[in-house]
Image 1 (cartoon, rainbow, N blue to C red):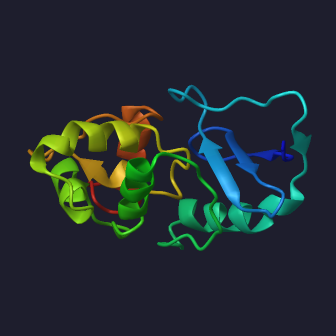
Image 2 (image 1 turned 120 degrees about the vertical axis):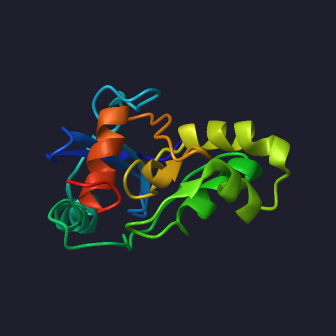
Length: 164
């Protein structure tokens, strides 16, 4: 059974964000321009900003430095492993970072699973609202970000992790 996908675009300091939602209004993806593996508007999708009012308001507050935690319904679909990794991302608070190894430990994965954790983080469909930008290398390096390293730096600077 095919369900309707709703979409809208929101202007943001990082470029025009593409948001998608399911018929219940739960956010299914948030992409930035040029993102690796980003979604693109498909035939049959319904352009409707209505389901995205709360997301738009919360994103505006976040970019203004006034919101530290998103409270939006999500509906993502991945393997059980990816879903566990994505849920662990939600536990990394605003203004903090975690390493790939720490995320692996939070989900009970063995140390050797760090590469798989990185793959799951890279496949996160909800950039910004599910904070994969807060994950860093074991040595503190800013490694990988599907939205581009310059955006990761911008987001971490906004959150006060990096000096402005």
